[in-house]
Length: 337
Image (cartoon, rainbow, N blue to C red; front, side):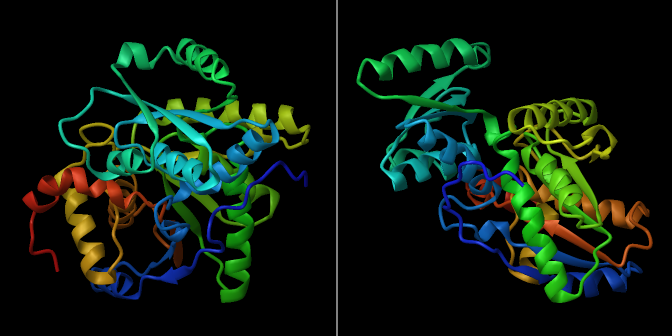
């Protein structure tokens, strides 16, 4: 296997833990599946979650190209942008974030951290935000005039470079499963920009983990992710000259849980967040993990995963996304047992 440039930044390996109380609660409702959780929310304190795994390779490539300004895009409460900004500060680099939308009256959650670690931030309404090539060219020139070199990281670090983060995670999961003598029937995650899912799919194939990868989309639709991930597979094979027939590898995206839209959640998702927090002391978020976990439990109840003995849920982090939605969190039932 090729060894692409990598800057080791995450605290790895992350734990794989059984959710015993939640699984017992499911059993009381006639569901025999045992739920496990891969604690990728513990990859770091501030740059926590799945983004840091991908950024190890994006930043590794940036350093190989002697860049000193990391430029990336995302929503106002982007976990990826927050992780990029924190890691840039940690490494003595600059960061410039282009955030979709208007500047809010209050800095909270991820945006608070962006400001704290000194990221340069440009707020961009959607039409301006979508002009990524033009924006990057302008920033590239601006920083070049200061004697600095920029490196462009796509939304979510989800490209052929970022794929390596969860290819490596699949290898780590295989080691987890061997240590625990566990043969899970499925690995489940959220997908928002496609990189985590694509990496898990490739890693599952390359390392013969021998399970099925599923993801619940938190934005867009199945067709979008099938196209995006297929394109990333093609770019990955081309860039690294790796012969893998990715056309034969299934991409399993389960629709129906986007709710009101990206970054917004239904009351049922907040109820799931309450339920998991109180049963297991694990905090999910309303943008990614809460939606995906709610989707997984709903599909279990409806029989999609019938007969599965063990399912592993990848906790991709995102807790800071709770803070801007605290009113919605406690507007739902506060009596979830």
